[in-house]
Length: 561
Image (tube, rainbow, N blue to C red; front, side):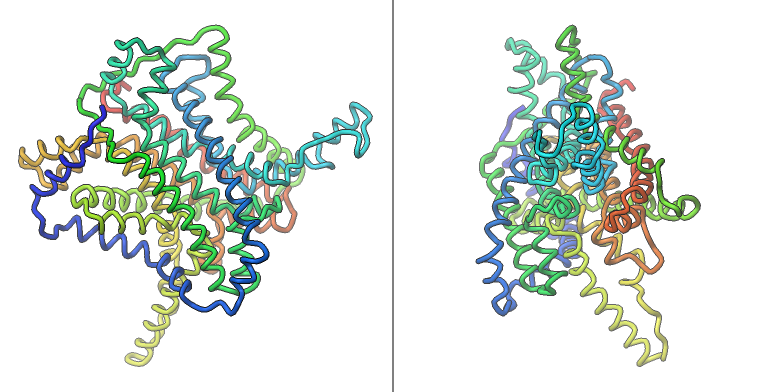
């Protein structure tokens, strides 16, 4: 139900005392550690650019702005419509294939965006199988027919939407699963049918989760490099890469990254301003089995089609293209070498997901316990790494850790005549650090949205009964947030499996992942060989996605499963 809530939460915080607590210390420590690479990058802003920035502003900046604006607008709207609509259908409606679509709608998350871009380009280009079949069937020649160019802004927006809509779907589904039956009962007693109930009750209550999902989509879109570069679409991200790694102008690239991050901050602030002081809390512990609306006839067919199309064009078709390419050629190194690639990817993704979710809980709960301006700013700064390109984050990490390794080896050599090598910058530790910096926002948005729906009166009641802050989190909040914690873990796991730029820069010697292998082959236009590693990424990522998706339903409080 709708309540202001902030005054009640402030009263709870005041009752805990205003002195510094372990939660506030943990919040500040996590924020500082995670924000360090971002601060290193932004330290370049005040440095002179020797006219490079002025040159960029007069030549390409307007094109970056135009393409970036339309890309995020199209992708944001597309993912919001697809993700929210399909999530409501699989949670609240009964139609043929519902149980299958519950987890199948997540499958596009397991495929890197740039891999799908390569697959569709091979399939839809002039020399591809689709246009070749059309010409053979109708006797057309070049210029006799119109076919949309996939390597365009519209093509990039479509491909990115097909890959990223599960962000919104997953968080929206978790939010719908957490909603209270009594809220829906009140809506029905007021004469609202399924669709009016969806628009006037479910969507407003799920707004924090929807905003979190769309925010992740927008930041991922702004960070996308492989697909937009392959399609020839100039955005801020391609401009940053070109300026930093092509021209060697780190200062100008950092200033472009600052513009990109400012764009994200403005979007977040506008949404929060429009939300005002409204808060959404569960004020009852009545969690029963959610009612399902049985769909029949054309409505059932429409629901099945609405869920089938995103899975078909976002996963099945491109996976079929890659499978065909793999069977035709494939990677000559397929075999035992891929066990090592898969183990590296799986291990890094699992550890990074656990760390990211754990730190997100610390940040979110720390802000809840000490809801001050400084705490909120610190948590937001710590979660901004997702909006910065992976290579820029990698450089921001590499600079301080390379200095730390050099200082440590110098000190050991001066005092003991011993050098231990690259302890930090040459190990998997720096990779995990980069993943947490990049993807903490993924878990933080999901955890914050779920924790914000728990009414402050539960904190007060728990403390009155003698529970500590940690006990309240463990016994009260965690059970209520189980589905959202699982959703956050899924998102981080799959993102790490696909992550490329930071992995290429920071990986230790002789340490390759499936994403690195696929990219190295695809960048050489060896798409048939790259398809093998790409399909392996999908296979490794599918099983956790299915299991965790099914666990989300069982994680609903009051679930009978």
